[in-house]
Amino acid sequence: MVVKFILPALIEAKERFWRSIKYSLFPPLGLATLAGYLADDDIAEIIDEHVEELDTDDHPDLVAIEVYITSAKRAYKIADKYRAKGVYVVLGGLHVTALPEEAARHADTIVTGPAEEAWPRFLADFRKGKAEKLYSSNTRTLAGLPLPRRDLIAKERYLVPNSIVVSRGCPHGCDFCYSNSFFRGGKHFYTATLDRCLVEIDRLSGRHLFFLDDNIFGDREFALELFASMKGMGRVWQGAATVKSILDDKLLDAAVQSGLRSLFVGFESLNEQSLLKHGKKHNRVGDYDRAVSMLHKRGVMINGSFVFGLDADDKTVFKATSEWAISCGIETSTFHILTPYPGTDLFNRYLKSQRIMDFDWDKYDTRHAIFTHPFLSKDELEEGYWKAYEYFYKWSNILRSSMSHETFTKRLRHIAYVGAWKKIDPWWAMIIRLKQLKLAVPPLEQLLQGKGRQNQRKGARTRVSALHDAAG
Image 1 (cartoon, rainbow, N blue to C red):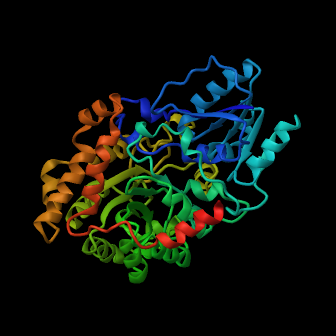
Image 2 (cartoon, one colour):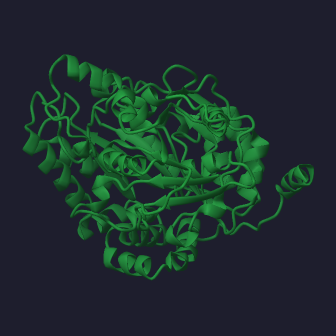
Image 3 (cartoon, rainbow, N blue to C red):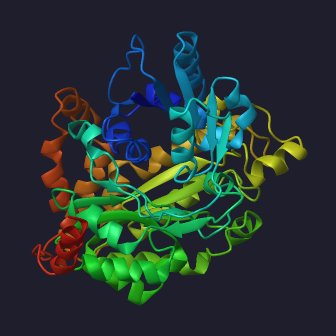
């Protein structure tokens, strides 16, 4: 059987604000995992439109397409073209789960929710010629999850080929989160087995890892075991966690000792009442400064996430948020305009109150205002969003922010990291065109590592070696 997996390009990856490096960070790990369920004699390929051109002149037995909201139109176009040639098409992903009836018009089969249990059932039925129109997960478990088919990934096209996921979902229930709706109908958060995670980590070359989990600290006991097992591997890694989990000294220390050097943190808002209204009860604004300090004292850089457009926001929110992040020395910030994604509680609430004014999925990219706000116009929200980015990433503010660190070395690290991420786009575009992203990996590892933290790749090996031996 010949199977073609496709990740269509997000619409924002083709707009005038497109940044080549942003869309060349991570390979499509979800599709590589689905490929892991194929038989040994199946032939498979993975095409990621963000980094390569898609050729639709072929005729595989099966085409599987992962659909996000801002790639939906492109995904449907690809699906329709293959179906017109008689190729069987299956669609899955966040947008398919949110709007299954819409997606079903462009597919022979759709898979909703997490696919670990539903996808192999579909494959078995497809081989028998008895595939159904809809598959949804009956159970939520990562037991028996195959390792991703990394041999199908063009590693040279990505800055972070060593991305990894060890859990699914998030234990929290923010009403604007797409993840919540995706996992509706079963467990919202669960992890893989520790042994499987260690085997996968050990098979990744180099030192750098990026955990793509929504919350790597989400299961405290699992995280402690994972970090203890990774200690001594000589890894440097990045991931995402909540403010609340960062305040756990034992957990944070274990993460740093295992190689944590950069963390994506969902601060979202400086207004606690706004956070409570959206179900983000685990964020306490009074804890923000402490969380930042705890990370920086341990040499961990921060990518802060912030959302504009919560009901309490006014015209001052954009500069105030940027100014706080600058004053705290947060290295990078990611700003978003609140986006009520279909399938979320926020979307349903805004739809009922007639606040959604645009149903063009291409604009659901967190850069456009697609709902009515009590105090801010559409133009004010969008202009404020762009001004926040411009203000935060001004060289003068990057330098000012770096001064919040105690030592010259940490200040220099701050400037170098931010400058590399936001100020050298032509250079990134050039090395991407030359397919030389691998040249940027050693400097990235060194920058993340910082000074005086060299670990040898030793210890933690006995268990991993034993696992390899047991696996044959």
